Image 1 (cartoon, rainbow, N blue to C red):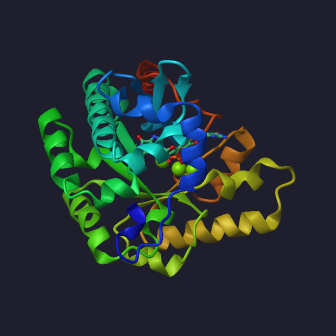
Image 2 (cartoon, rainbow, N blue to C red; image 1 turned 180 degrees about the horizontal axis):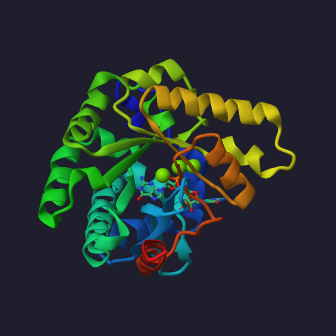
Length: 285
Ligand code: C2E
Ligand code: MG
Ligand code: MG
Ligand code: MG
């Protein structure tokens, strides 16, 4: 479905296999009504400034409490939601919830600095004509400044994207919304291509920085990360690293010039009040 939109190279992860697995678990029948039944919820994972360890914001990660199967992660149902089209209202719901949460943090913890919110965007949402209008409407109604929102789009969704697909992202970027290239390093990375994308953040995928967890770290791995960071900075992109699991890794990535980090070393995704605590701890030293 999503693939048909002219010339874009993204593909959904093997739809047939996903559909089969999901059908077996009876997700197909429960998904369409899940939104109306209020079965989705969001966990927030903090993003941290590597320079001083302070919390800069959080990424919103959706979960589904399935009536029979319990809590399911997004990898289990996002592909199905994309194929059925539910991703459009679901994505809008996630955006609204997350923006409301960010606004709430800002009001309650003004002293913790301007906390920002990252929300994942499916390639299917990019094709939906209401994306820009919905986003503007939500930000205005809730009263969050566009600069506090970062929309994450995967590298595979954008590499090779034509201008029609980039247009809504350009408009959002012009309004001050940050666009992040998510899971960078997992797709067909054409680094020169970065220049034509309206992105301001590069999110290095966990697989990309996994070598940093080994000891001793392979010097070639270090060189690669160093090179990508310097290229990103020369293009005025800030660099976020995903999947930081150890303190040694965090230190190394900071020394290599990465700006922001996210991972189990700091915190696993969790309920919004956890971020209140983290931000407050930082604000008060
Ligand atoms: P992502 O955007 O790359 O999110 C990061 C994933 O890495 C999350 O998995 C997070 O829980 C996990 N993670 C974070 N730190 C660590 C770490 O230190 N080690 C390891 N091993 N993993 C870590 P999660 O929550 O299962 O989400 C998976 C993917 O589902 C996300 O990848 C994102 O692409 C997608 N997703 C999540 N929420 C949404 C949503 O609201 N809309 C859309 N379209 N996609 C979503
Ligand atoms: Mg993401
Ligand atoms: Mg990611
Ligand atoms: Mg990733």
